[in-house]
Image (cartoon, rainbow, N blue to C red):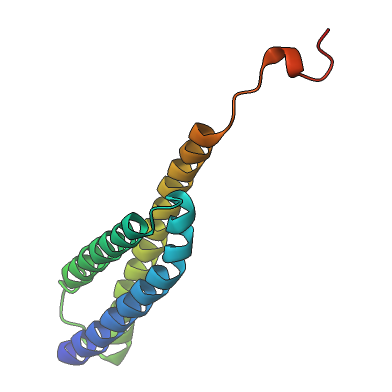
Amino acid sequence: MLLAVYLVYGVTAVGLVSWLARTLYANGALFLEEVFPGREQLAGAVNRLLVTGFVMLNLGWAALLLRGGDPADGAAAVEALALRLGLLLITLAVLHFVNLAVLAVVRSQQRKRHELPVRPDLWVGAA
């Protein structure tokens, strides 16, 4: 029974991580090009590094989640599989939002650096 859980979990975990990595790579490219305007090579390199780290971390975590006891019956096997997949999905989601938050901060700082200073005598209502 445990071998079946491992097999289903392994195939599902690798499939999920691979699918999410491709999705993040494709959609992250546009976001990073905005974070690094005019520096497409840098944006591409950062994107590849982020995806590589994402895959390594999550496949490593998926492997660590495999440890556990031998389920006694089919119901216990399904519960063990659901627990492992649930933990993996929650981890994937948390890491995704952490990446988005970090990139949002970088983008905000980038925009602040490129803003033109406004002279106080040009403020609305200034005398």
